[in-house]
Length: 225
Image (cartoon, rainbow, N blue to C red):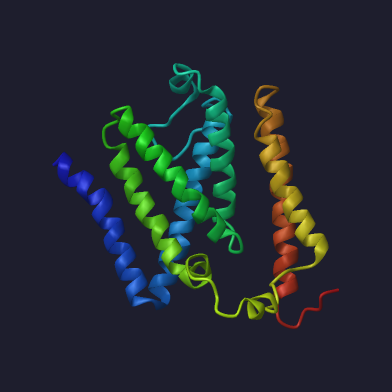
């Protein structure tokens, strides 16, 4: 039974990816949105768990906490991974930067797979491999945007002339500032978990405000001013 469960951890994501990308339409959209939300939540939870010294529970386990990593003098590594996971989670939960989050998530999953494999963790490598399959599915979904990394365009000048989808400069700056405040606040646990959560909450409000500003700017019939 255990072997069947481990096999399903990989085969079910493979099947879901193949069906969703093959059928397309609403099923593909559901797969993409659901996968981004799932993996984004996992990354946010994993990052906050490490950055709060295990006081904020995550969704995925068993976690690599500070006590485990401290045995190998890897506390700073744990903090780095926590910040990276937090940032990846934020990117995945946005529409605009979700592709960047998915790209960053591939080496993150590989790091977890090989670390837990080398530590003889039972089950975790199989489960995380399933998440890696889902992440690769997100990249396949965005292949039209990624293909230029593999195949340089025949006419690069034409790409340079394509307009970029941007919003008001103030909204762009506000979104970046909000993300920076969230990430910076996540490092304040050594001072106080209350301060950490408070600063991160302010950053989240900035991000949501910027997101609303950008959404309003893109609505048909709404002027840029």
